[in-house]
Image (tube, rainbow, N blue to C red; front, side):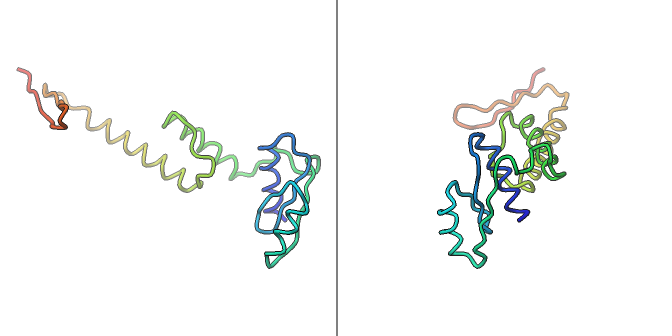
Length: 133
């Protein structure tokens, strides 16, 4: 039931006008109970959980995982200038942030050269170095 309750909270957050939602044991959400029951018949556990908006826990009751994910989404947004895909996994999100930080750090360390050489890429994709005297 805990998984179903988490799904219900997310559904209510996405659909502010929805009054109730029906969740099957595989985590599928349905507006109509009959649809949920029909789907549940295809599952080993055919239980359907129904949640009313008033009964579902509020968004304020966020878990530590939710808070961590929000922080990761915020960090990703700052690094990339856009929000990540809504269904990206937390581990994937964490890896993309780490990879981007490593790339930026490597870029910073390679840009510290003080010689007077300028590298230019031509229209043909050829790299040419100009050494200034």
